[in-house]
Image 1 (tube, helix red, strand yellow):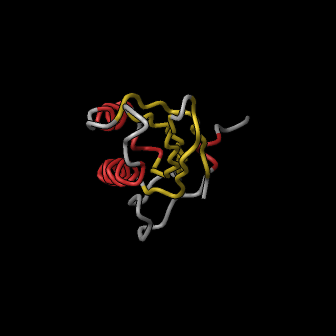
Image 2: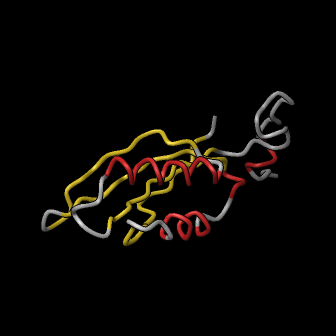
Length: 114
């Protein structure tokens, strides 16, 4: 009889930040944030988005400003968060509520066991 994968995983130790239990993966998320205009300071926008991610329980690992179209640039931010945190929609709404943000899109989500 084959056991489901989650039954085969070792338990985390009590000193783990997730507080024990079955091993859960970390989730790496890439967000694309579009500013309202080319005049928006991308450094200020990056700092504001990073604060929202940190308050959500994530940790920013990378960020890049990429050309989009007609002089407009997009901000791509990669962050890691515990898988059990779950849905990203509250974070997307929180970031979309910033004054200089036109839109927020989840570009990529990947799991990393560790």
